Image 1: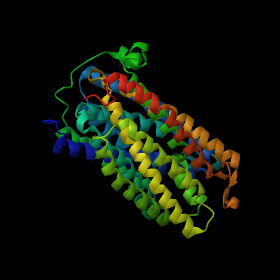
Image 2: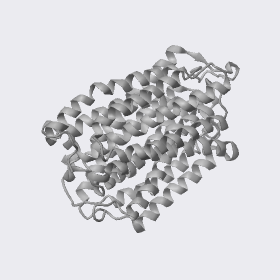
Image 3: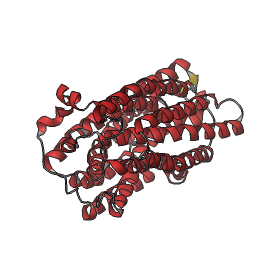
Image 4: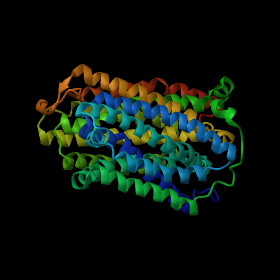
Length: 448
């Protein structure tokens, strides 16, 4: 950060580590689920458990790593070495399979499937441990250290687009690559890229000059102290909005590709096209909207963002059973609407959280952020989504291929309706946040 600007070098670091990190998370959130569903067992309960435990591990890892990075005054080491090890765990994940388990342990196929399901859940948690240390704790704290409020909306807008860009790469390109080279080689190549990113960062990533050693391991619970909560009301109220938003996303996100494949009957190329149109268009619109947020009141803009996201989700619920072409078009159009709101909500909340993060507690508060943005959403959201899937009990298209290890049902369209309803619940919190920020700053503007 130089002369009130983020700087080209910092932009390079943000785009490299941000995009590679989001690709890794997208693979975990979308393709690890599909990998388990396609190669181990068509078991949505296992997918749900994997998402939930991953959220728990991510939060605990961020609490410890964020606090330690404050204590040592060093984000760089956690960021770079974390990415290096993260890549290794991703590469190893693709080697898990029932056939390998059966060969190594000499057990029957059903037992091999059960053991492999346990192994993929544990493997996902190990990957999340290093991923959250590197990305959620170190990288997010590094961004906060190196940005200022007057241009943070634009930076956060780019950060909010990166997950969608990663989703486009993963959902489209990875789908084609899986067909061409298989999961094992694909995860190996991705792991190499992540590790190389970490090793490269050792030579050019620098911590902010403002970063200093602070705190101790007692600060792991710093963000949960009543006095800290009371003294930082805008920060925690914004996190409550993030929590509701996160729950809404996790109701449908873990199951979306499976839904498009199994319920809507889209091929890899078809759902890749839907993602491409929706994400590229949504990202383009948000490049303007998020920069506008630096000139407008961010809290007021949340009303618009929530309405757009909820409208898109509602449209995705109705975009079904109209014929393949109609479903493709409508799901793409409403997916664009949803993603536009999705990015804008994420950017507005993210920049507001950074605005109200105390400079002397950036690292130790990353774990608190994870409780609201990851832990609770990734436990509650999939629980709601899979309960809806189980209640609808829509059978697998090909029941003849089902075995005793499958749950024999696929994602239901009602997950989008439920997500829309939860998204609208944010409207009850926005006026409270508006009142608190107005009292905090005297005029309702974000303090700089």
